[in-house]
Every structure is written in structure tokens, then in C-alpha cells.
Image 1 (cartoon, helix red, strand yellow):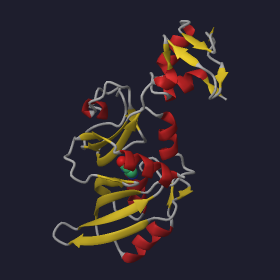
Image 2 (cartoon, rainbow, N blue to C red):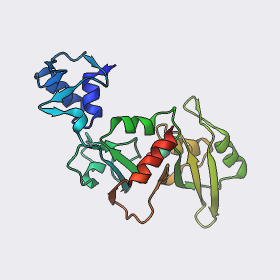
Image 3 (cartoon, rainbow, N blue to C red):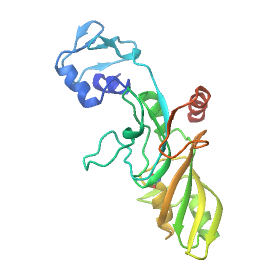
Image 4 (cartoon, helix red, strand yellow):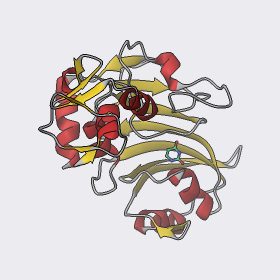
Length: 237
Ligand code: URA
């Protein structure tokens, strides 16, 4: 059983706040009965109609965006900054599947399918995310091993990670590396490298599960291919 407003929002019909407004305005019915209280709970078999639209009839869409730096991964920003929504050519209300920092570029999925989003970001499912990192200083083998084994950030020990392609650039005293993690804690990659005293200078997510930036231009948004969607769901199981 889940709260009615959550089910409506997860369907992609509208935001949770607007769903609450629609409920209190008497525009939502469950199994033919108008519901105006916000605490109501429903299950999958209940027939929910919002303003004449059966909510499971909202078509699900799935996008991948090559997010540029300088965009927030939210649907709106109180500071008035550009959001990833400015780059999504959708008449449907989609929202980001997890987040990339304002200064991070790369693969960002967007969808109006709440179940899919939960599957992709839930900590109990492990979809790999691969990042190209440029950091200050020389990343030593021992530090890299520490990051791979698990390192403490914010009283939390990170799960196993993989690091490869470490290259040191002596001229500007920076290193580049590829890291693969299967979690998605807040600022995780930046905090991991910070923990070994190598602040991240540039961060790009080059892969989310099976979805890569292959042939995409920065700022480009495309629909996920059916095989990518299928594969992502399999990977999350
Ligand atoms: N880890 C970070 O620190 N930032 C991101 O944007 C993604 C992963």
C-alpha cells in the first residue's frame, strides 16, 4: 500500500505537491469514489483517475541526456540556475533518475516511470556507474587500492570500486583515472578522492549501466533504446 499522492507522482502525471492539490480539490477518484484526504493509501489494483485520466495510462518515457557542466539535475532551481529540463524535448513530465552535480557532465537518465527510477537508484540494486576523473596531484597505487577496497566518507565505508587508466601529468601535477562504482551517495566520487587528498578538478560520468555517451554530443538528449531499457532492468535485479 502506498500513499495516493505518491502513486500519482510516480506515474509521471504530475509532481507530488500538485497531486496533493488535485486530491484536496476533489479531482481524484479511487475505484470510482472521490478521495479528498491526503492520508489515503492505495494498492496496485486500485483504479485511480485524475481529472478524467487513468494514471497508469500515462505513457512511460525514458531518456538519456549528455549533461553539460553548469546545469542542475532538478526540475527547478530556487537559485534560478539552468536545469537539465531545459535540454529535454519532452511534452511529458519527466524527472532525473538520480543526480549529477552542477559541475559534473555526462550520462543522466530521465524518466516519468517512478518504479524504474526507484530500481535504478535504490541502494539494494547495483547498477555500475563509470566516471572519468581529473584530480590534483599524483594518485599513488596505495591510494588507488584504498579507494577500490572501500574508504570512509561521512561515517560510511564505500563499497568495492574499480580504478583503471591512471595517468599522471607532470606538467600540471594532475592525474586522470577511470573509476567504476555501483553506489550513488551524495558527491560520492568527489568525496572519495578528497579522502585521499586528491580534490577532483573535473568529473564526467561516461556510463550508467549499459548506457554510454557513444555518438552523443554534449547537451544532446535521446530516447533510450528498448534493448538498453531491458538491459538496465536486468542489471538492477
Ligand atoms: N559523484 C560525485 O561526486 N558527483 C557526481 O555528480 C556524481 C558522482
